[in-house]
Image 1 (spheres, one colour):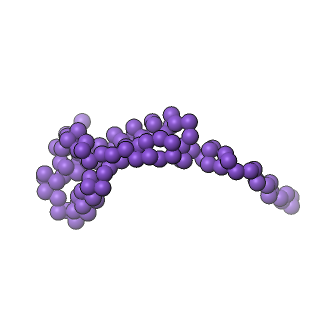
Image 2 (cartoon, helix red, strand yellow):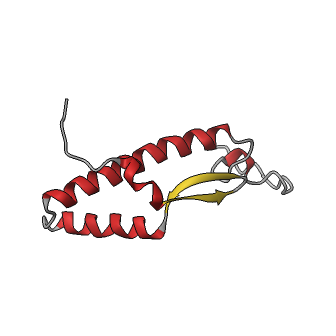
Image 3 (cartoon, helix red, strand yellow):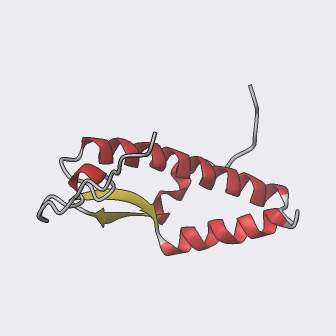
Length: 105
């Protein structure tokens, strides 16, 4: 088991919003939390994170993983989602054409 110091993801809940996406609402980071994440990631690239910032980054990334999982579950249960390619063109006429050609054999 990998032990890591981390800020509790639940302490970051004020930085969460619901975002409309198609006919469903998904969890997303508010602009402040997203900016904090990007700032910490930039500092990590240059190895300038102190231990407190590493714990904060770990907590934010864990919350991001949790919301990615939850959002995927919400999207898969939705009757329609913009990410479901089966529904993208339901209201458009079928204009597909078979363009296959026989190969000389």
